Structures are given as C-alpha cells and as structure tokens.
Image (cartoon, rainbow, N blue to C red; front, side):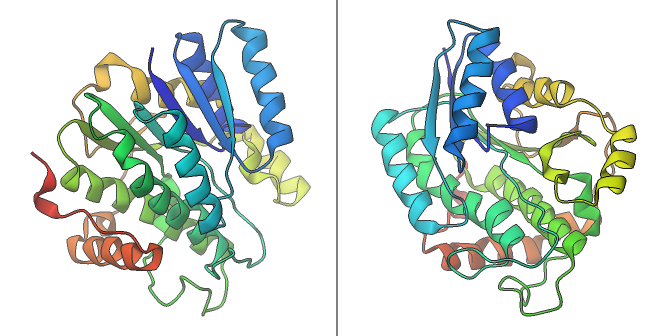
Length: 281
C-alpha cells in the first residue's frame, strides 16, 4: 500500500484521482481548505471502495502558516510517504491576494505548492520510487513569468495570471527533476479540458458552452492516478504529458535562465533552502 497525498482532493480532478487511487488499494490523504467538502469527498470514496483508507487534513495554500502547520502534522502522522500530487488550484475573476500578499493564482496554484513540496521532501527522502505529480495545463502557453506581478503590481488578467501560475508549475516540475535525488521523480500533467469546479466563477452561459468541449473528471483522474502509482511511470522524471495525447509545449517553459531565477526567487519568497542542481545522484 502506498500513501498518496493530494491537495484539493475534495472535488473535481483531485477527487476523481483519489477515487481511482483508493480503488487500487492505496491510502489517500486529502489536504483541503473546505473540510465540509472534504468529509463529503471521503464518504463518496468510501461508497465506492468501502475498505479505503482515507485521511483528511486542513490546508489553506493561501497561507504560509497553514502550509507549515499542515506539513508538520502530516509528517508526524506519516514520516515516510510515497506520492505528492499538487492538484489544488483557483481561477478568480477579480484580483485577490494570499495572506502574505501574493496574487492569489500565483500564490495558491504555484507558490503555496512550492513551499509545501519543500517542507514535505523529508518524508520522501528514504522512499524508493517516490513521486511528485504537478497539475499544470496547456494554458501555460498563455503565461509569462513576470517577476513584477507576483504581488499584483500590474493590471490583473485572469487568463494571464492563470497561465503564469501553470507555466510556473511546469518550470518547477522540471527544476525538481534536475535537483531531486534519484529516488524521487517529478512530472507534470495537463489533465485535459476537464469539467471541474475550477470554472465555477465563469459566467453561466460561457460555462455551459465550455462544458460541451470538456472531458469527464473520471478520465482525467485515472490518468493522473496512473502517473502517481502506475508501474509504467516508474523511473520516469522531467516529463510533461496530457490525458488528451500529444501536447504542444511552449518554448519558454525550457528557458533555463528564467527557470532557475524563478526557482531561486521562490525559495527566497518562501524562506526555504533551494535544492542544488548537483543533488540528483
């Protein structure tokens, strides 16, 4: 049995992923901001897999204090665990901010997961075949790493901010693949155009139209689950794949200078020690 931690696993792709992983006999831990929805998600998983081991934790990725508190609690419960899936995400229509003053999409979708990942790495240090799966998106094509927007200094663009956060997720995954020890892999995934709650703030008519072109969360969840625990992903790292098949990847995601600057700047913003490039052995 593997222990798999999923952020935002109470709905959408995260819940579908948890359902698929639990059905295979693995323990799932859901780290969620809304514990009421987390309880509902647990009951849904148990209804499908009555013997499932489902653990619930409170986590607000818009607060460094919450991330630090959760990480300490989780590692106390599971000093060693197998898989981290950084799934949680937000797409607010208006500019909002985290507790530390970061633009909300950058702060939750990327920076909160950056801090969380670094705090949880000790729990994977001695686990052979440990994996980190980052939820990125084809929308990274609409993103550009603009160091002047991390705290919302410029005019807010919902799509631009989302694209930046997903480009940052992809760059982070690639940087980890170069910096982590060989027992831990790091891969990114575009789950496809998925009918999930992430679009809940869109205008009603636009949402209804968009749903005509979206795939089910179950299909996306099975793909992410396979990346997390499937045997065909053993030993693979530094990849970016899609549940829809071939995936065009923006050239800017491979800009090594920007990628390293983002990684090191994020370490400073989060107050963590950056991993060095020579760490992978």
